[in-house]
Image 1 (spheres, helix red, strand yellow):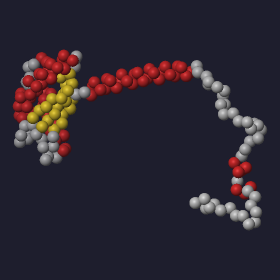
Image 2 (image 1 turned 180 degrees about the horizontal axis):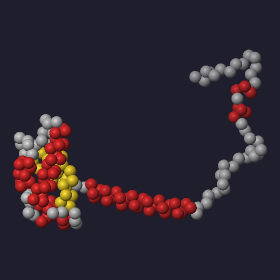
Image 3 (image 1 turned 90 degrees about the vertical axis):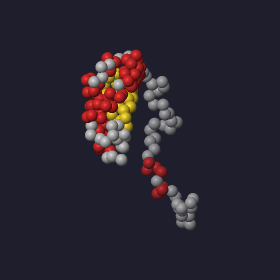
Image 4 (image 1 turned 90 degrees about the horizontal axis):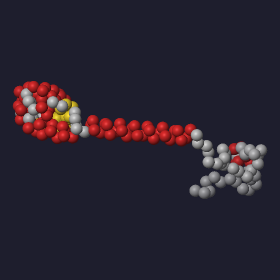
Length: 169
């Protein structure tokens, strides 16, 4: 097992080498819109996973995937020439879903913001359904009850009765 830091450095180097090789060595027009976004290498340095995005529609995505699979050998050869490891890692290409997920998340945030604005507009002109003080009481308004009205000092104990606080336990 190699050091994880070494694997991370190797992944970044592979990412750069493959991105440059896509522009120089691969003569397929389908790879022009490909951007390598990330690379990850296993700790044993035997397998590299490269994440890519494609500018365009679904047809461009499918064509780019086929072009990368076709150019895998040339790209692995270029990686072997430009990195210093005993064995050249195998390359696996995976379409990066982060831009798609980000655009979906942005759409959800726009929808939530629009709905919040609608609710705020409705609440601006709203009034209470009932009276302002829905908690009515039968007690006259003048008789305020204080906390002091319920102190233990006000309890009238006879001489032979004592207050046993632990009796209920």
